[in-house]
Length: 142
Image 1 (tube, rainbow, N blue to C red):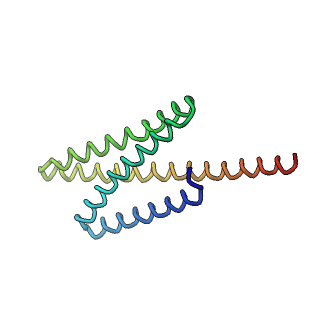
Image 2 (spheres, rainbow, N blue to C red; image 1 turned 45 degrees about the vertical axis):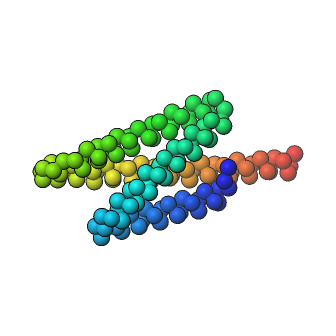
Image 3 (cartoon, one colour; image 1 turned 120 degrees about the vertical axis):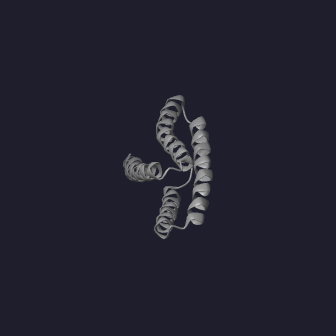
């Protein structure tokens, strides 16, 4: 398992990449956006593989909990991607406008969800640091 500092550094790098994607959307740089989407597809697959690997190493209870959580997180995003793929096939202007509006709302929802997950991750990091400090205090005093 990676140290928390390394994980947080990786998280900061990912946040920077997200900022770059947002900048590309403002510039309407289609090639850059399509390239980033392909890279994210690979990253998501790698994340799923890593999560599966970690779950396999966990206890049965943790494995079940992690599997349920991962499935709950994957399912809505898979539905969003499937819906986006279907929208790309539409050619009617009104449908395309409606689908673009839907895609923008989906993106807003995904960002809100990501912020929520980041808050949960930050909470878990703080909880882990405090638990380690408590354990160190008990070991020192005991």
